[in-house]
Image (cartoon, rainbow, N blue to C red):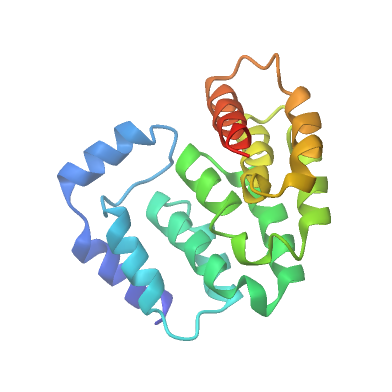
Length: 186
């Protein structure tokens, strides 16, 4: 499936009511078609032989659904080249503009390589939580969601959480609470 075909599908599946809802729900998102997430999941699943170039092209669009689709496709192919995946998330992180894309990239985008690249992901997390950029900070926290079931990672996660304990940003606080809630289930 080529980018032009994906654009055609997204335009045909766009609904004004969904666009208005998404614009409110992810208000910091740049542009929105109005396509429901289950449809994006279906598109991502049906792309045969997805590659990293497609992921990059979709991400560059600055359209909410295309960026979200890019993260879902990345999650499908990340095992093909874990190093390339890490390079992409490092490039994408400063361009995150909403919580949904942030959380999807930090979880679904790398879930299949999280254990393999745990050391690097923790390094990213430690760097991002110190960022002045709200979405990078949240991204740094949400990356850690990949390890909340790993008892050996619990203390390291708590150490990183300590670095944001006084942060006043709403979306950072929400990620902090979410992470703490998941850790408490251990």
